Length: 371
Image (tube, rainbow, N blue to C red):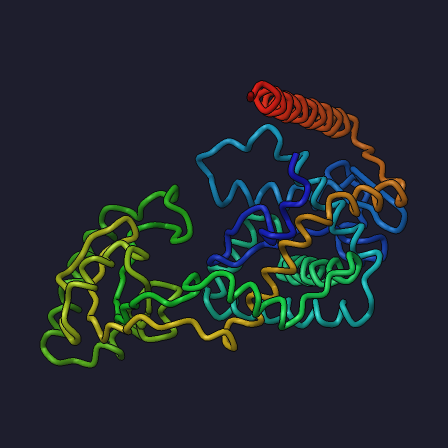
């Protein structure tokens, strides 16, 4: 059972334009609907200073399901979710006021990005699919960001510029930038949800209308109209709509990458049909490969090294926090699932230890048998 997943993924899944839906519980001081005592909102777990309610678990599980609507949730989903919710609350108990302020600031930046990327109706629709309100999402972002920052301090992790420089020097070429294609695109969607390939298509009449429209727009651009202005007005790609259709990508990063890298600057593609809809694009430039600049990468490398240390140090630390907080699983069914998962994990650990012991014994015997 991987109970450290949230620290390096940020969340179980993504459903809002690639932005992570962070997971965390609302503590006893929360003033939202978590304070209700209905059967659907019963306390399923608690520890010193916090409670986790069924509603919070349901939000995370709904987020997973919204991202993969055609896929049945894995058997261990509830166990992983409750474990992650508990771990975030355990870390938040030790967070400082400064860490909370920084977490709130980052949460607001994340939410602002989502609000800018999606229209208001789209945002409301996707929040509804996850059983969350906008305030729920803000709070969860803030708790996740706060826990991320606080855990590094609690574990005594301190990564310096020198540490990052050493990693950079020890991995020559690993961070060099490959050639990039810079294009302007115009996409008309034929799917009901851009974020998942499992979403159903739009009605056939709508798709046919968009098929005719894309060719009309293509001819307008070929006729000399301002592509940027048309893309800003008609482009339905939520990622590039606010940039007038401009996007930059590596080779093999987009479905039409090979075509883009084979074109000449200012050349137009034909109309293309893919799983998202109908599109055409113009190559603006091919950006040459560039050697990595440590100064530009320094903060990213430091964050990566912090994450690596968290992954190594956090499991044991969280285990001790769990003991000291007297964590209890109150829901009988959930408690049985957690116990089953822990027993399976313990058995897997024993099996791995036995395998490694046999490997070591065989290596020793081989050395002893040498003349």
